[in-house]
Length: 378
Ligand SMILES: [Zn+2]
Image (cartoon, rainbow, N blue to C red; front, side, top):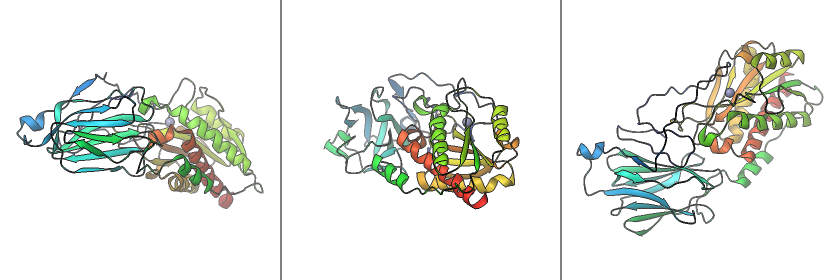
């Protein structure tokens, strides 16, 4: 979401490694560098149980004293409800999923944040990853819940003027579209062309590995732990459909960039596909989506095929096919692409990238893209 206004402060709690920064901090929405040197992880501030909220709106007289003041968000003892505490009734309550994904927003009008807002400790919560509060304008507060992929949010109740109750989990009336059944249905809908007549030689390159974790995202999600399982499944699916597949690595080991190129060249690959996950600063959970990189024009058809399949199957935001001088693209002599399957730092993407079932969907989508290309070009 876009942070609006000078008084927009995000509070993160319950995540192992998140920082909070004031709105307006500029971060370029660039992918991490896959040419061999990823940017250093963003230094993270230690979190305390209570984080101060800007009182700027109050001290500047922008906030009327008749608005409700939100002082705490608590978790019920059993973890199934969030309780939002205010000193009087809030105005309008609107609530809904952001896009199709795992971020649920609750907007409260005629409400301001107290100078200190108590937020719950989410350390051991199974499916609530983060609670953020944000003063979007002097009388509107946005609560954003980051949830695991299959968590549902029920209808918000108002048992007293000073209390809102947000049910989490099983008894939902509105759930995220990304349920286990929905993922399975999407996988089942993916048709993989058979290429056993042409037996194309395909090299699959899981990015990073071993001592190089790649990017580190929300909840410590490591790029190498996302891309290896996806790559292994892509390889298995391609083989199942008749392709000859070589993986540059099959386990969690360090591998420089030149050997990845050598494996592709030595095997006279028809196509080289490097699989990565994207990242920017942890202060930019709003940046999400899939993109595919090429270097030469000969890379374009396979990139288009993979990107289209990936976006169609997953619903990831489409960041398009882009050009970059990545080592593995510049130095390979066959059509080669580098797929960034989503952002480990993205509030929408990260829970999906961390979900083995969703990774299976991603693998099917990438395999379909490669096979579609192989069927028409090889
Ligand atoms: Zn990478």
